[in-house]
Length: 499
Image 1: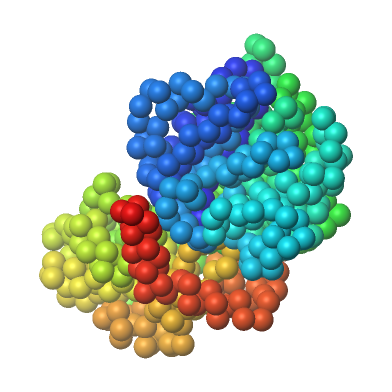
Image 2 (image 1 turned 90 degrees about the vertical axis):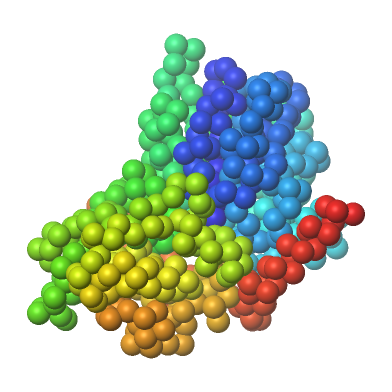
């Protein structure tokens, strides 16, 4: 998962891009970067670390001049985790293009071979974002003119859609031209368009989430449509193209469950309201299946599940309490490398308020259960804090399958619910009772407010992949996502740095 932002302004845009990236930091903590167009020159600064770490010196920002720019925050779902794979990526042929990408391509092996054998383009990393950039660059090469027309650019994007399989929202700077943003044909990964009126004229922005627009004073105009491309020239002229290759809108439902910030709007649906409805639906399930429950208190696992927990407690007519205090200086354990590191981080990240647990039957609520590492330790923490019984509820269904569209879930064999019944997961976690959200209730909660959404990508719950999957891909992904394989890549990366 990554965050992207692009702005065409009337003055220097780098400070606004920086501010927007801080609002997208939850989408990636591994690396950050900004690229700007300064006349005929493209300026770029990127590195590993948080936004505030990468741009900690005034000189880092001082060199990023220009009224057009893009920014990116990353955590790796493909490739490695060294600074060479921080984005935006850049190629200087045929026009000079910098690109940032959110998502995951699933035909990378075939694309890499095509680029080398047929397109004669060289790749420097294992990142699928570099693949996407080079496919776009190759398709733009046929235009060859000094000034690309919007039609030339949109034809190239349609060619990208034909060649690239998977999920992607991308923004690109094209030297001497302007800013390009596009969304995959299924609309799996999010992208929104914003605008801001100034005394010097209209400014435009494209971002992963509307919250990034809010932070810099831009008004949300709309979401990009599936397969849509938007080109904004350096002087602020906007052109839109709906691809003939567009499919049925199928946004990723895990954005609403976990990744997106609650104040964001995605495909005309409030993430906050969707999470409220998740809690209401979960309460109805508990009352239906367990009408004589003995729950004394509902306690959320901070932060994402807070929104679901409030209406859940209200509908159950039991107390809601903040019983787990979060250390704000520990990152999201979901995306931390290595099981041992995740286990240590749970204890460092959360600390119980003993009075809220002592001699009570507690219902802990989390947004999802992935590996089960966090859930198991929190249940144990609740017992150590004096809870009489510990029940656990997930605002989403069991995560049983790989996510192949840009969320770096673990190998399928490392998913606690894979191949297990709810009762078996309950016993493994050590809960007195385990309640999962039903998939139909989750879909209903996330589509209310936009009847145009007929389906979501729910593949990590159902195992159904809307783009289709080539033979052997899931098996290869299983190998690459295993903790042992990731550990080997980190060791190799460290060895390269030392040498």
